[in-house]
Image 1 (cartoon, rainbow, N blue to C red):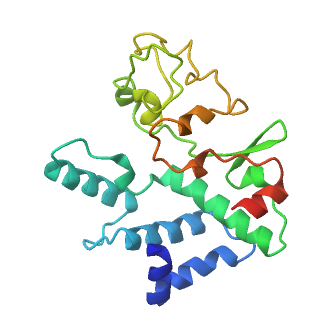
Image 2: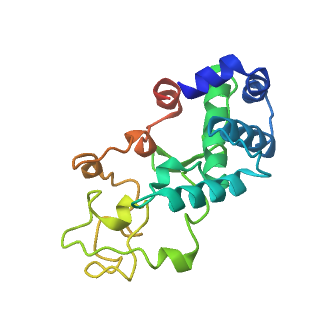
Length: 207
């Protein structure tokens, strides 16, 4: 609803959104439009030089004020994650406009006959930081009670029991084996990021 309100009230933002309706648009152009829209959504009053700078400043501000752990969902997405989201949005709009594109070039990857959204092509954090996140799960790390899964990370050798090898959240666990258990235990995260569709037509209907 915030985005709809912003589009209705801001002519310049609305013009940027219309870029997604243009055929043969470049990825860099889409990302630039999306970053400007993102900064407007998060009300960047300081007019940061980039979305990355704003993300860092917002995190630092929240960390200084917070009495407990700062939730990462309050931050805007990283540029690699935003780019993949832009590509999927552009793909969907072009499909609605009867312009056929290859989904694997626009934010999706194909595993068998299933299309899986690409969340990001970059690590969520520096490797040194990722190694500091671990879990002590006695089970298969299926639910959001797993510290690694809750942080959106795969289990790693620092995990006390699974060592990143013997659980459902290890790198060997592929997207063709869906983790439906994630949505069963106190999971307030939207399931949209885990959606997989079996063909282009289902994407057209589902998004």
